[in-house]
Amino acid sequence: MNANSDSWWLATLGRTVVWARLREREAGTAEVFDSDGNTLAYDSIDTARAALMDAEFVALEGLDEEDALARGFSLAEIAPPQARDDDALRGLMMQSLGARA
Image (cartoon, helix red, strand yellow):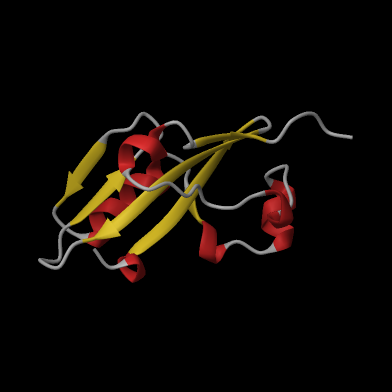
């Protein structure tokens, strides 16, 4: 699997960041690994992106600090979850930012 075909998306619920990983497949299809540990298949990368946007997710790579602050966090507070496999990743897809100082 090529990590370059992965992009990270996020949504916020209060002080919790909910992650989703969008993976483009060689055949032009796409899959989204969601915070429930499900892998959802889509017929194209555009369809997958549209589904994420409909669910109020935004692409991490498209966020700047001002956008992040508007969502209630700083880019310095977050990083996409890392794990050896999807089973281990499942428990890391929701990130609590704790209480505001």
